[in-house]
Image 1 (cartoon, one colour):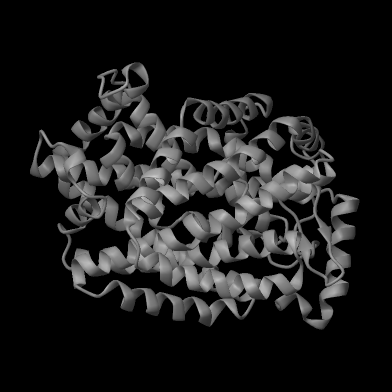
Image 2 (cartoon, rainbow, N blue to C red):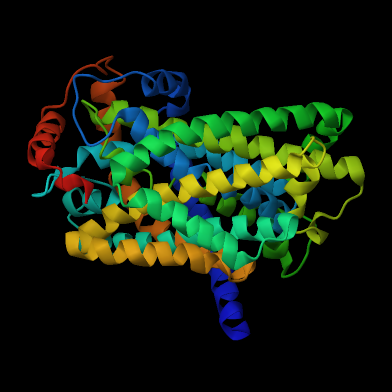
Length: 472
């Protein structure tokens, strides 16, 4: 097991080296420039996300698609993931995580445009879309599409199930002395209770839990920051200083603090907001929308809420809390679980609230990734293989709770990196299509104009799924 763990760790370090970091950040910046800083339309996206598009049809509502995407992104990555980045990459990792979120908004937007643009309806009435359909129908590259779908299933084992259950189990063991197998078993039963109901049930559960828990979590972080008072500004200064530190740790330039901060900040940023990963478009394609750009604007707000707001807030909260106790703290000496515990310990029964937040965030993230895996398995093997996937996915929720934390995180990083590579290539190649659709609907002030192909797909899906097969 030690040999396997070392191999996984070494491969993770190799995969998340400068080439992948440059590819990810490069596509973020490239799309930001080509789309004329699409981030400025975030207020419009938020407005659209709470409006009902009554003229459209699809599997789930626009907000339902956003809720599932947020459920999959707002998870343990916002708490344990950020803390892990700080422990491994120093406080500067928070800055690079935030930067990844700012520029990642453009990438998330582009992914959703392509997802709706190239979606189709299957014979069973299921509306299918996502990067693999853009690769196959837009790039005419079936091989890359299959590769992406396979890597998506791999990511389901890491970021989608094992990492989430492991974070909850570790916290329950550390704080409440609950055995890992017991908390893992309870999580598994809760997942089974929902996944048998299909994507519409998942949408309803996520639409209820995610906004409530996110608002409550943000409120608690703001209270803690107020309690930390004079340590907030030093925390911000430390984040910026560490983000650009050239202090060597090992291996020359590529072993400098800035590279560590970038590696873990960007990797955890991708883990958290999934911009460039290609996951959110898998469910955005199922949304009720009349044209690709409307849903893309809504999808892009997910990165804004997840990373620009919640991850940044978590980072400043935990760092200021540690500085309050030890102004000269060595963050590498802490564990990922200790940092949020230290912060929330300042609140009455804070450890209990943190535990509840982790459970709900992890629960909804697992549900969101179940929907992503459903799309990938449907593309690869159809309906019969989905039943096998459902059983394996549920098993991995339990398995993730009882194995070592560092192995789980490394597996997740590897799966994320492999999934991101074909998706980023697709985004770069089809960037012209994204710009064309944006010009047609957004820059021409025609957001309310229906796309004929989009409407045709919606109506076909509605007619074929009338017998309820879609819920399988």
